[in-house]
Length: 265
Image (tube, rainbow, N blue to C red; front, top):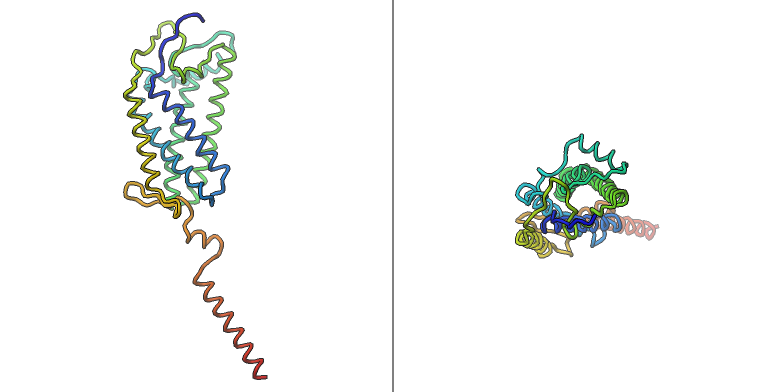
């Protein structure tokens, strides 16, 4: 392929893509590596909140963005997905400037899973049917990992089979031209700056309003207990201060009565 590459993915789309990747990896790693009683564990929730906002902004851009950022350019027809799957193993390259069928479906599924993770995470910290939504949250996270791995494997397979490094297009935003399909003219740097500003401002708001000592987050007027409260810790370990004090008092009285009886004898 000696043809000059054309611009396909704009700045906002590429920024979101890599921020999405980093936020999920960071949040998932914290959740899997650290114990849920660790002081750093709530940070995976904060990262999840930032990721949810990024997805919402990407969805808006999916309707208002450039040609290949819009969802209308995604190949979501089941027949196209079948055709692409068959074409992956054929010697003839199936190329398109937009997201191909497999990446189109994987992107939408990961967006939906990310929003589901944000919602179930919020319901958990809001103590709304906590145990149920904890199970759903873990199920969504594992599903996300499976889809992400399948997505990466698909990119590698496509690259090796067709000598078309489509993964790099999310770095420089360019692809080799395809007959009948034109590239984009504007990269929308101002929109990219707005995207960064909104995400950064929200992340800073979370940082400023999160108390690391109590693990409480004040989010736009609401109070969320991200870590286990002292009450929950007490209940989990069977530590009830008032009951323990009463038990110690009763034991002291029993010992005193036993001592008095022995003295009388």
